[in-house]
Length: 546
Image (cartoon, rainbow, N blue to C red):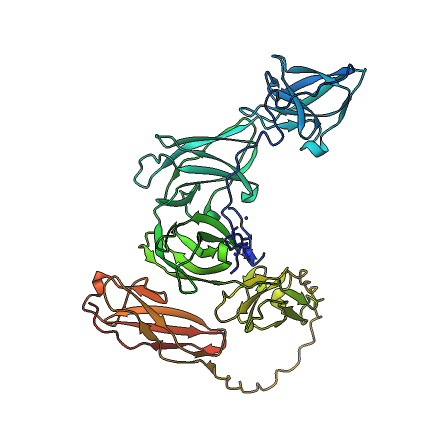
């Protein structure tokens, strides 16, 4: 996986942003280099000074002229809107429209660009353009400039009520309406009754709500609220419309633990971010808290697949861990050790022709300090290709119509195993459909040749897994699966209590519960690979759980 701003975004992430692609993308994206949680953007109306009388008109010579026009919207004239004439980006003179939407400036001779604004009801409007740089320029001289018009876009409203899981109102919840696929948005905070209102321009939106530290980020969905962005409902709202969006916050799983930095307590702040997987990308959805006095952190996540990034930016140290959270899962203990990052990194490149039968070669580039080795994973349209883990890859028929890319991981003892993803290749051409072969004249049926004995499946070898950890209620046991061959295997785990499978205990670690007391535990590791016979090995028993 990759990072983006605190890391993850695509498959790379910016270090304080989500998995450059190091794997990555925007919440909303993030194509984390370590990814930053996207900040809710409230409509800005004054990047250039939009208040009445925002900047004094310079003392002028005797030559002045007039510039006039009318401001309207879909309902008619806009009364008392602010109209600003800019002689330069930092020098503007403002007046209000009359009740009939008209305005008239008396200005020194020169060139001006006009901005109309009414933040309570409309999107701001540069006349003739979308910003100062491309707005229409009007020249004021002895001849009056008349007939200037623009139609402002009326705001829409997204409103509703945010509830806690028990149905009571969520006071002080932050609500964000994300637009443009999560690259910008507008926000509000609920009142004591859980109500909120957000003014937006027409467009498509995805709405999220959260109470930081208590309830995880929850997204609006027509099928019921969800903590998984990919299951949220995006809706379109038109000018002057109102969309009701109610959300019931979900419960979450709290991750806590101690952060070290190469074995010692970090000397500076550590940013802890939960990056949720959405398709092949990673979106920052949760910001944890870090206690510098004792090196502990606290992060709340809803159901989903995540990369938790730990970024000690002041020391260029970082680590990340991947977790899967299920609905109603118990709180988890997870420690992390931030490791040094490379001084110089490189985005891998691919040479070769993207065509069936051709060989593509990955060049990891130059890293500093020099890694001990590199690991490779080839992707087809962003999805890992099983077994494609060498520095070269032969394009197959399965790749037709797809783009290929490679993730290169730099491995060095004592350093974070950093990774970056290449740019995708051109789309692999699809072979033309062959012309049907004419039906041949039937020939006598020959005596069938005996079917050859099928080649037996290859075998997988492995060592007996070992359980580590204290056999005590509340503690976690982990399995060391040992050494297996060949490479490219996929593994499954199943924990047993006195020989009986424990429901849902299918991870490489298991937290002991009261049900385990006075029992012994084992774990079975199963390895699979296409063309090989599946192999399962079971560990020795633990001592009886105390």
